[in-house]
Length: 88
Image 1: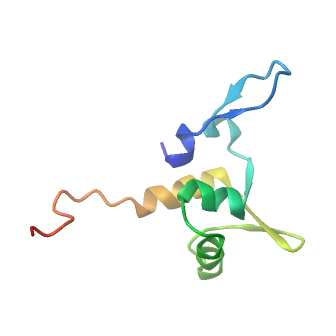
Image 2: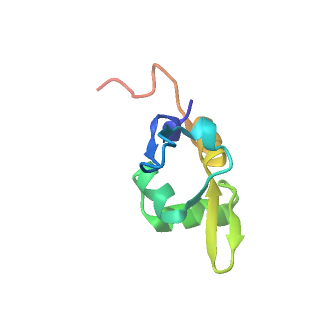
C-alpha cells in the first residue's frame, strides 16, 4: 500500500463513514493535495507532471491526479536498500 492508502478522509456525518484510497481508486486529487501528501512544493508536483513522471488529467487550466497514480508513482520511487547510506 502506498502513502495515501494510510490517509483516511471523513466524508461527513451522512452515514458514509471513513473511506480509504483503496475504496476511492477513481478519486482525483489537486496539485496542492498531492504536494501536501508528498511534503513537497506545488512546483515540484508540476515538474513531475511536465516530465511525464506523474500522470495527470487536465481539467480546464488545472491538473488532477488520480490517487492510484500517485500511489504507483510513490511505490516506484521507494528505495529499499539496506546499504543506502555510506558509513561515516
